[in-house]
Image (cartoon, rainbow, N blue to C red):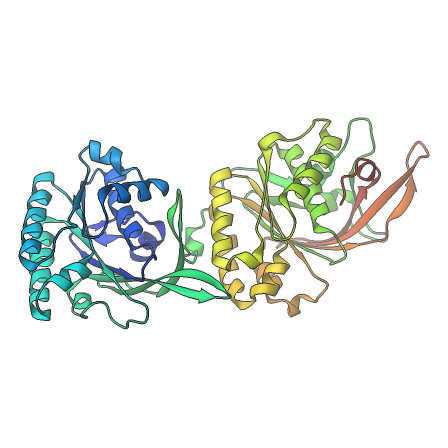
Length: 491
């Protein structure tokens, strides 16, 4: 079977593409993105494959269409100049005779241009102009199925689907076509979500029937398709991040290090063994900390340290801390360790208010950050707040996140603050299962110690249980708080 790409990653992943010559019914509530879905089909076919496309529109003027699509990142005017796109306005069609004449002209245009992709927006107008159900079926069958399919033209027929309607149009449309895609709005937790429903696809098994999606500039259509483990490639490169090297990166020239790796008293393991624990590129690391710990401090300290150590780009994405605060703390720590004013654009910060978005929207924004900034290391802070808000709705979405970030090759640290036992928090259990390394962090009392010159210093110790598939051990990280407090790096 000759399948052609729709050009929307999620749909192509679900269906494998669309058979050449297929007729697809794309129905939906007003404003759900029907025209955008169809336009993306034409745009990617012309841009990537050089396949000419035709858009017949009964409801929208050409300039309005071009302006709307340009705002989403699709430049149809340049495709017009190359002869790869043709827009047909049919705003004045008011009776069946004029409709038939327009369709005949459309078929001639398709033949003349060698078009391989066609969109009709919308067949609801066609059904309203044709007298009777049987006549409408005859017209659709003869023109799209018997007429264009043998030419290898893949057609998308857009249909209006009013709120509360149980079938599309007269109902006959769904029987004639090869596939039915329905777009609709749903209200959830006081927020609106767009949902794609796959009702029919003759050539492909359908495992995921309903999927949330978003319309976004640049990416245009982002469908929340569950990740598959088989899509995760084998690790590439030899980058590893060891505890010993991270501690060395936190040293300041000629001064006491900011971070030291210690062993608790009575430990049978030498320092070399405890310090050799590492995680590799693309690893997913869960950091479970006590609620008494300010996770933004640990995030700022580790983000600055890892950037000094690796020189790689770091992204911090928070669900509870303001980006400006995290950035100020991180830059402050970075300046102490490196002597430089700041890491420039080597560390980027972003945050969302979880109460303002649904889980799938948040995951989409996270993916957008990763794809646009391309960090090697990613810190996620405040996951516990997401779980409190969304519970089970979040769990199904977050299961996909580690697979997605592994596939993109991003080393990720998930910070989850809770004093509850792991068995009491489902998200914590899920992350423990998905993680390559688990680190449980417990604070000890802030101490005053004397350095080698007899000066008093504030020291904060954290007892850490580190578990990997091959090692489980207890170590202690000692943080020199004195310079951090003097520079007001901690808030």
